[in-house]
Amino acid sequence: MAFEPLVWYCQPVANGVWAKAAESAFGPYTPCAVDSIVVCISHLVLLGLCCYRIWLIKMDFKVQRFCLQSNYYNYMLGLLACYCTAEPLFRLVMGVSIFDLDEQTGLAPYEVCFPFLVFSWFMLFSTCITETELVSKSSML
Image (spheres, helix red, strand yellow):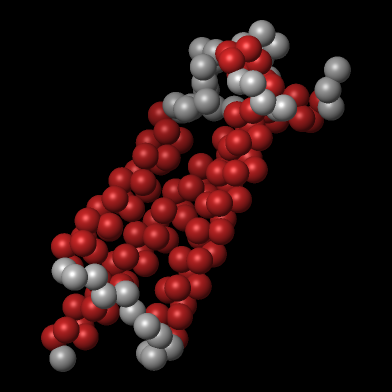
């Protein structure tokens, strides 16, 4: 038997889809490993980079700003970031799991990183808005 807190956290299904179909070293723990290690860590890095970029823009006026060919590209990036903010928020509110292939109800405990996902995508949206605002102000001068 596996380590009890790990079994509670990952909730593997013995003969489920992930145990049979996933040919990886993790077996039924595959969705837990992917979501906990890859997704959460990458979104924490994205969150840190966005916070650092906004801090640089607000504190250092000599920082190089990203100028796209048109503000419409910035608006499109902002719209994409807004969608990426809304999608995990919708999954969190509605209790929809993307790893639920075994028809279990509710979210697994390892999907607690949804607030990190929402906040990191919101910070990316804020970064796009800040960049667009500064480019618009600098083009008016």
